[in-house]
Image (cartoon, rainbow over all chains, first blue to last red; front, side, top):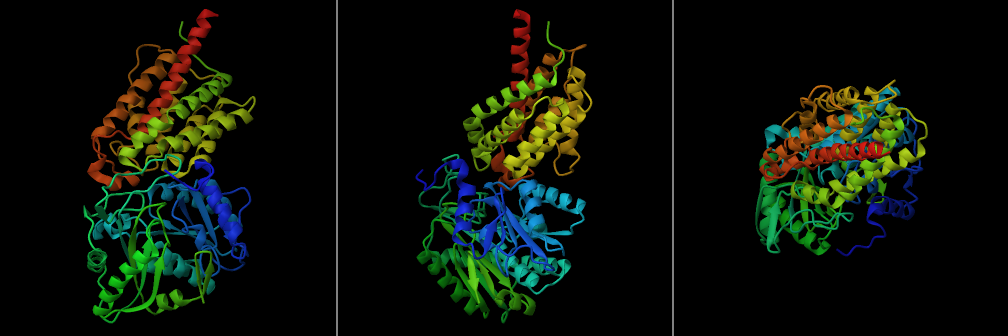
Length: 332
Length: 218
């Protein structure tokens, strides 16, 4: 294992400190905690959006803290949810008096810790709503959609909720927009390699040099099929077929697309994947309102990518196009 | 004669001893976790018990219940993840069961075990057979002891039962947590959290045995 690190136990905090030092115009670290808030927090009268989860998925989560996006991001250790106290304390710093939306991926560790933090905030009289991202088609069948885990589609959900909150919507309205964005988003990924947690130094699972696994989760959870590596065009069409089967998208629909790198895949390959995806969608008579290609939600040094599709209505389209300024996304 | 009770000073030394044992088991626990998870359970346990040890060093003249409650908070705060909440709450529940007690003997320990079990099962999120720490904990709670066991005998029996409960998780398919996504792939491997719990009890029993011997030779 070769890593650009100092101490394997300090990866999460040192990475976060570097992010804050790089982007002081957008965010600041909460004193003594492994978390960040918008530089102008708390915004009085605006619903605060707090996101978070295990480290190792950079730029998720702290990289999406800024104007038109999240107000706070709390980082756990690598691939482990943050504990309740920093979630609670960070929420108190970001709270602008009109409630907090917890927005995170649906993993049992995160649910346990964020729920406990929400209880603590309720005790203080602060309103908290929770929306869990469940975009991963491969993680459970459609009739158990609420059990699905959250992966790259969380980027869309934060974008939509962040823009809604910026319009000074109420907590219920922001939560409703986030819920709708999640319901309209589907993701599936393909992994070509494992990844290595710095503190353990070993790959978290085995996959042969010539193999790929479609639908694998961002922590190596089992996907839908493992087999020999195929050309990018074939992989893209298989993934898109699974997504469209799960979320029927009528001809003429407007959509957003994210082709997301998992950490060790060159941008050139991501564009090759998007080339296939874009052509497929054009042939299906769909209009892409906005495309994102890049490392938006990574998985340490895993090779591979995921494709996320969000079906838009007028509200989602407006919120998607709204301005955003944070370390990992600047759009006017 | 086996020792029948410990004080808060003893408990503090015992917890430090347990912390040292868990830290030594880091690589072993990582390799167990690698089979069904992301291979970092040993790291998590080490970080949690290092935090407990640091907290214990700060605490002076503290009651038994607060030693455990503070240990639970320290563990939860240092680790995160599901195990942080579950084991953190178990330690806090263990502490609350000792409120007002100046000593812990066999009876207090049995009550403490039940309190820990309730803290997990009352959440409603985990059941026996889900392949979690609860499978080791429930086995420990169901031990039938001989007449009037000493604390050392009680904890030793609970540790053996917890270990057997943990080993049985090899035959279970994980139904909760991130490993549940692996389904049948989890068969044949024990749950690392359950084994960690049996390691904690074994370390406590070992500390008591050594302590009993020190008392005898004194």
